[in-house]
Structures are given as structure tokens and as C-alpha cells.
Length: 194
Image (cartoon, rainbow, N blue to C red):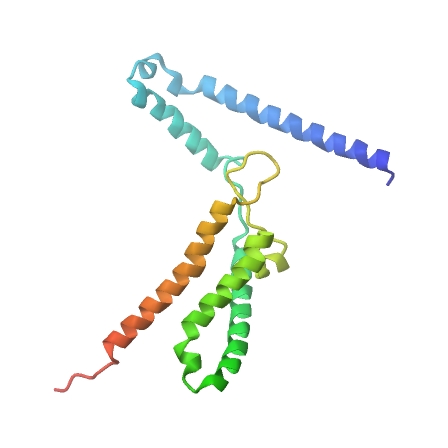
């Protein structure tokens, strides 16, 4: 395909996309005009109450319409998460083998910190740098900011990535440490003697 044919094909695709967006906007404006929410009695209500029916209807149209919520492929996301956990397990096994030379209890004593460090390194090298975890990159999935409008999604901001890392890496570490502390406080299971 020559470059002029390719450029012409791109122009046709962009023109079709513009037409579809214009039709969607016209259809939305027509629905708003024909809506029973535009009744004069509702428009006379005080400010918060007069805008409530319109915002509720627009939310309902966004949810039920095709253009509202873009579907996410949940099976691919679950597979990506499983691949990430498998990689973490493999790396933890390698680090555990290295820690056994520092003493028999080093692997168990430092297991939470090792997992925290590995998760932090994997987060930095995958999600922070490339907007996709290792498992997601294998499936050609990326993290996006779904609030962006238009056909092209924007990448997550540094704040979004930071919060995600804090919750997934730091949150998992805090949960594991708390769980371990609870198990140590319990002291094991004792049967009741009768």
C-alpha cells in the first residue's frame, strides 16, 4: 500500500469517526429536548433540585448506552494478575534460596520484607515505567485513565500511579504483616478439654 493510499484511508476513517460522534451528539441533544425532565414545573424548583433529574437521566443514559462505559476484559485482567503472582512466586523462591545461607530462619523472618521489596521493584519496572504489569504486557493490556474522553485514552498520571502503588504494594505488605501479627498473638489452636 502506498503512502498516499494509506493517508487517504486514514482520512476516511477519521471522517467516519467524526460523523459517528456528530450523530451521537445530535441523538443526545434530541433525547434531552424530548425528555419529560424539561417540564416547566421541574425547572421552577430551587437550584439543587432542578438539576437533579437531568443529572440522574444523563447518568442512566451513560450506564445503559453503548457509549457510556467502555467494557473491560476481566478475564484478561485476571490472567494478568495470575501471571504477576506467578512471577512474584518465582522471584521469591530465588531470593529464599539465597537467604538460606544466612541462617535457617532468615527466609521465614524476612519473607514479608522480601515480598514487599520484590513487589516494589516489579511495580517500578513495569507499571511505573511502562503503564502495564508484566502479565498485562504479555497480553498487550495497559493501564489507562478511563475518565479521558475521545477515542484515544490517556495514560495514568503520576499521582494515580503513586496511589495505585501505595495501595497494591504498601497495602499488601501492611495486610500481610497484620495477618502475621494476629497469628502470632493467637498462639495457635488449643482444643477445649471436657
